[in-house]
Structure formats: C-alpha cells, structure tokens
Length: 209
Image (cartoon, rainbow, N blue to C red; front, side, top):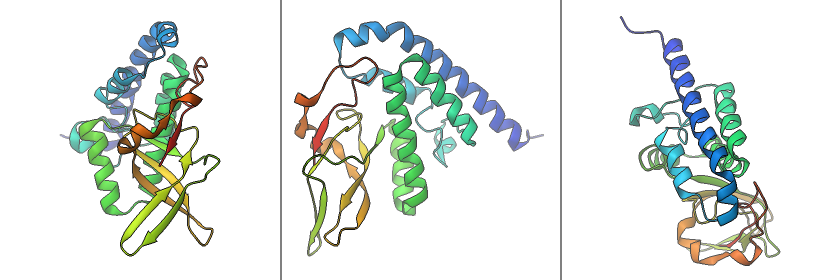
C-alpha cells in the first residue's frame, strides 16, 4: 500500500533539512579559511546540488531524483540552515530560490521546463540581478535581433551563476524581466569593485551585459 502523499512530503522535507544541517556545519567549520583565501565557492554550490537543495522549489524536481519540498516553511528551514553555516552562501542560495520562484510565476512553460532541467539534472545555480549600474541595462530590438546593453551592480554569484533573472528597461520606459545566460558574459565581470567583506564577499561584483 502506497504511503499518503503528505507523508512522502514530510519525509522528503525532513531528509532535505537534515542534509542542509550537515552542509551548514561543514560550511561553518570552513568559513574562516574561505574568508582568508577569498576564492569562488564552486565546490560548496556543488554540495548543495548533490544534496538536492538547489531544486527544492522546482515543481518537477522529483522526476530527476531530487528531494522536493512543497511548502514555504520547508524552503525557509533549508535557507535558514544554510545561512547559519555561511551567510554568503546563504545569500547565494536565497537568490537561487527567488529566481526559481520568479521563473515559476512569470516564465513560459518552455522556460520553466528548461530551468527545471538545468537545475535538477546539471545543478546549475541561478540568481536575481535587479540593481542597475550607472549605465542601466536597456533592451532594444532591430528586426528579430534583441540587444542588451548596460551593467548590473551587486551581481551575486557572478562567475558561478549560469542563468540570471535580470531586468532591463525598454524604449518606452517599462521594464522587462529576462532570463539571461550569463556565463557568456563572464569575461565582462568587473572585479575591481570586489570588496572582500566577511559573509558578503560574493555580492560586490559588477557585470556588463
């Protein structure tokens, strides 16, 4: 006899929270060393992906073996656990979850499917890049060609993020939400603005689109 869906959800949520706590303990133990060397925490993000935590709010995540959490309370527990271990990783993780929620709410079915696949199967990290630099990001068209121009400040996870939910200004002054494949812009990251501050070192980057 199959277990009720509510019990499956509760079991998955409990298991994911236990994994989050284990990862948080490891993050806390290594925080001082990571602050000293100041390198990008790609292996930490990989740990989150391996634990199924990057896909906790993906609607079809369970189809690829990840441990789906269905309630806001479950997601908040995981976010709190990771943030308690290392606040900078927690901020990246929060941005990733926020990006997933935005894609789920505003994305097309094709976009939702593509993002779910990239996160669940390949452990890709997402972010929300909303803050414009001095030269704000604009979106213009010429025939069938779309062009982004400008820069984003506080580009959390630049160098780690595969896709960012970003905003751009249209010619009529309205704003458009976009999914931007940001890995191709990695060479445009302005690391001169990267100020190493404990638990906030990831967030002081500027990326030109």
